[in-house]
Length: 267
Length: 278
Image 1 (cartoon, rainbow over the protein chains, first blue to last red):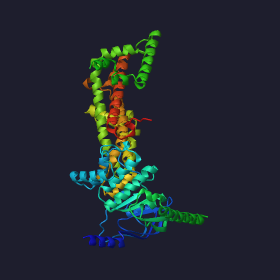
Image 2 (image 1 turned 90 degrees about the vertical axis):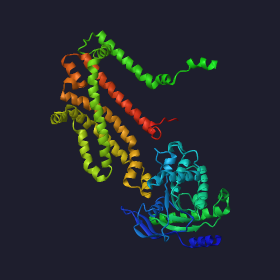
Image 3 (image 1 turned 60 degrees about the vertical axis):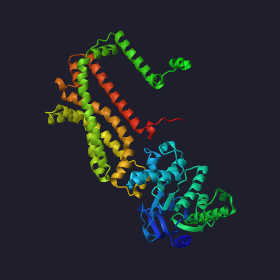
Image 4 (image 1 turned 45 degrees about the vertical axis):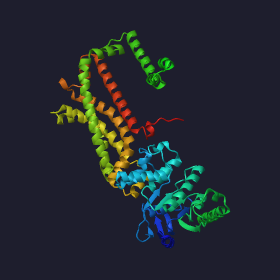
């Protein structure tokens, strides 16, 4: 039993859940958002996409979620296509007229899940993000961090195995951000989630991820792909470790190299 | 026990406090000052009542002519209310239709504007001729024309003001057109619709009065506008003012009622209905 679990885990490690090959995206106005973008996502890992504004990080998530289409190249899911996606946006994007509970229930309502079953899933999601006691509260009464928790619970309620997060904690203060990072690591392990995490913050990218993909803009492309080989999930002490600092420096260097390069091109 | 019974009378009830707030008190004082000035001016200059009656005389006339004025008030209110309900139902329907596709909106919106820009006084005679067998319906149609557009234009704006991230969320969850309408677009448009409704409430009353003026119908079905016309012919100027006062007060009451409705519906979530503390 344990052996078979282990071997399947190893098998999954070798087979990416999602592969993007030579993906390009050109918008109608001629802007090249992505050029020859390649990415293979390992299941049950967190992959951070980090880069300057306009480097196409969000475009990657839009293509994966099929909110946007790709102009060239190919996107393939692991055979069987058993993935179930959820998306967490930059802003919490809650319905102001609905309570916390109704907001989280929305995806189930849209999928016409029977009420009893839906309420069970909702309370499970609420418990997982620590929102117990706030079920009947309206979004306006919540802080930014709490709103983001509702947004994450709404994403989790359909029990996805792939979570796309587009700068979800960008607008939060440092303390809240740290707490949510911690909780996200826990969730990823509890639920065996594959997470693609777009962020501006180098520290956040390194702290969360198994792997950091550094991108550059004009056109959007990958300039570095750095594996973060530290034990996972991590605790806050990791933030002060030498290893963490080394990885941050590495990511930072490849970012500034990329920026310098694009500057040189512009000149 | 004793202390509570003793304290009871000294505590000011909440409603008294709210009546004593500057928001209520200030306009009341201004109103009283203006009315007193009016009354004094009329008395000092000895203005005859057929030119300008004073407020006291107007109130006396209102009380005296109550039996004639109230049935007319009821007729006018019935026209305005029916027109408002019709405008709400048809306005919502048309707005939802417009919001289904940019093409429908593009093609038909200019014609909705046409209803708004056509002077009601100019078309009322036509409508009254067309519906000559049913004056009530003719008057309702006139009032409806005036009340229809604010509801349509506001609701369309609301239906198109959805949060782009929420639209994406609905798309990702494979929501169909009706789910998106019911769970996202209609709730988003509610504050806009209610703002339109408040405007239309007053307009329906004005539309009803204007249409009555044009129709000039007498008999049992005569509204307040007819009373104003007749009072004018007979130089019963105080009665004219009394009828005018009834119309104005009714307009204010409609606006207040619709504002209250708006506050009740939006109190939990929309900033327009929330108390802000800084």
